[in-house]
Image (cartoon, rainbow, N blue to C red):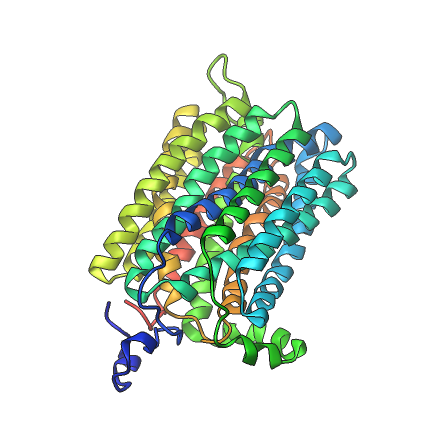
Length: 432
């Protein structure tokens, strides 16, 4: 893989310690068995996120306040989004300062069981909000640490393959989350507990089988005062390429999850389903279609981007495909259109996440603060992902509600955000 023009001017160094585009020490080879473990960890993470956000949380809110379910889901999601967005880079900085990832992966995974048990046992909107904020906190600890494993342990030449393995966690996890959520629709508390246990199991397996050595920079990072670590969070966004990657990911993820977060309510109130199919069953049908398309495009996109050494092109095209997918149900609010949407959106979003992960690993601003900088970037993924239902509730309410054109407007806004995400990769200069 070609280095950027700026780095090609650096004198040759020992291959074992040559810097990557982000300034990291490039590992010589990928540790054996790491990629399947990364896929498992990310699968568990997305199983929980999708199972909770796509099925169980909307059902729980509907049980508590059916009349105002749209507004209440937006409120819970909005508050938890602010909390999660602020906490993610803090979680990343903690693993940077310790020089270790595995303890934070294990701690976050085990704590997810308690957080999910608490969430399943509460009965008011206030307590649901508090419990989901705690759930977001422990999952951000898990996510920030496992996201940093790729730049820490995978050589630059294999980043596309590694990103594909990581990206596969989303379609597999999405399917598992939707199926588990639907299976436990009548036993929400049990469903939450099962999701938490899956994350804990993946954390135990990862940390037992993927051994690590403390990062060489751990001692230096540990000497940096925490106050300066906090001040450096926004400093990462001053880096030109990193800032545009942040913007592009935030826009696409927001567009995607504005619709996904309300998919159950869309199927309940807006789409005329075939006879005999309940909304929960429809979610369980759409999600595997989306997942298969996402898995295929994740693998193909990751491998082709490595072979052609082109990242920006694949990222932009995949964002455009996502925009087209979101426009289909806006034009035709039918069950057939939702099936087409699920397939096209899976193709676009899967390719985007796989290739964008590889792109980002090459433009990280700091060699010594990988988890912190990835934590800042994760704000562009985790924040919009959870904030989206709040934004969606505003759009639906302002555009006529669930009985009017509110959901049609939601699809249109989502498509527009995806197009803006495609345009945002153009200014990036450090990679092709």
